[in-house]
Length: 334
Ligand SMILES: NC(=O)c1ccc[n+]([C@@H]2O[C@H](COP(=O)([O-])OP(=O)(O)OC[C@H]3O[C@@H](n4cnc5c(N)ncnc54)[C@H](OP(=O)(O)O)[C@@H]3O)[C@@H](O)[C@H]2O)c1
Image 1: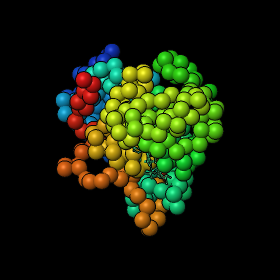
Image 2: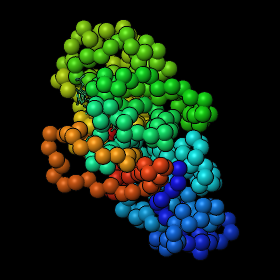
Image 3: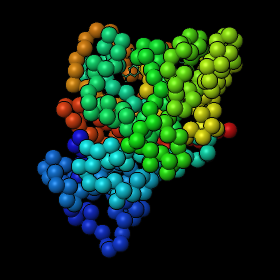
Image 4: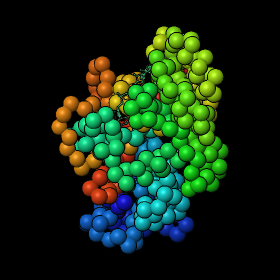
């Protein structure tokens, strides 16, 4: 993958006194001038900043974002820009800023979605026709970084969800971060109409979590428990209160959350102002038709939530964007 944004700052903008860390607080004050041509103009990587948190320019000032420039993975841990072609390099570029969160049970919620050029979130009920090798690579990396993956029951049914794998490539990183070898899949469902004999429940590396409302059907709850699922009740009716669900996951120690949708779940998460970050793949495809876009909700927000672009990568015409909230997230515990 190659990086299209942030554009590399001019070499003089990177000039710092000896011993000064380029991503440290003193590097923050103002945007540095972009070089002519950006990353593509010089793929040697010489004199370039690196993707991820802590790029001094052209990001907005820290006060506006709540994410100080020193928040990310230290520059030297990111490796060269070419490392974006390795799982490790991508993992470093997409590390979670959970240490910034105000409370231990306040997780960071990231979404990973793919969309066609004309806004379709699926083609004939599947996302695979919109995806690519690079998209799947990033999909795997984002899973490899997550504590738990929040997903709507319809996506589980439609895409035949299996448990997340414990992958060798992420073993060391996960152990160092105190994470289980594989992220837990956390399914949101009111009906609990799920196949409890499927590998998602019978063969998970980390027990599957089922999140439902207090009014969910009792027999299905019992079946879920008998199948080894961790049952979380969030909300007094049959519907799940998603803010409560996110808090419960945080209380279980799942602070790096990834949601993989689908659009109905993501629409509610956005409407409830629970989403901190969106990793959006724009697939160079057109689909026409009436497929959902990446969010579906009963009504639009009163005011659109403004997001801020953190990075943009490209491979084979696919664009991999990473956006975070433009404003600092408010503490959600209480
Ligand atoms: N483009 C992408 O990146 C992407 C990602 C994921 C999925 N997709 C596609 O999207 C489609 C599926 O997505 P979808 O939007 O139709 O469904 P979804 O969001 O995956 O799941 C909806 C289901 O989740 C449960 N649910 C959601 N919110 C709930 C709440 N507050 N309380 C209780 N249960 C809740 C309900 O399950 P119950 O019915 O069990 O009660 C509901 O029917 C598939 O075609 C898939 O291929 C695309």
